[in-house]
Image (cartoon, rainbow, N blue to C red; front, side):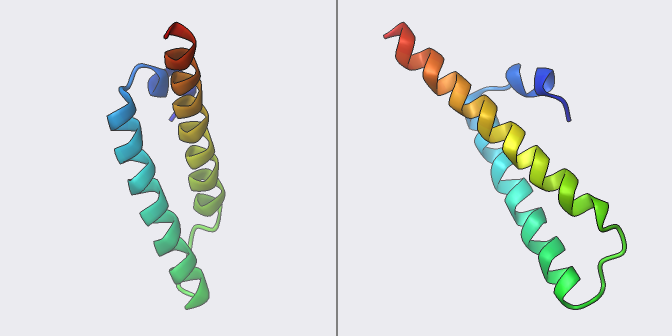
Length: 68
C-alpha cells in the first residue's frame, strides 16, 4: 500500500482500513507469542501501514481545519 493510494480514499475508508490493520497487528502479535508466526516481516509491514494511514488521516484533518 502506498501513500498515493491512501490519499485518494475518504476519511471513513481510512478509519476502516486502520481498524483492519490494527486487528491484523493484534493477530500477528498473538501468533508470535504462541510461536506460530511464520512471516515475521509482516509485523513490520503492518506497523508501517498503520503509520501511513494515520499520517494521511492527520493530513486530511489539517487540510479540513485550514480550509475552515
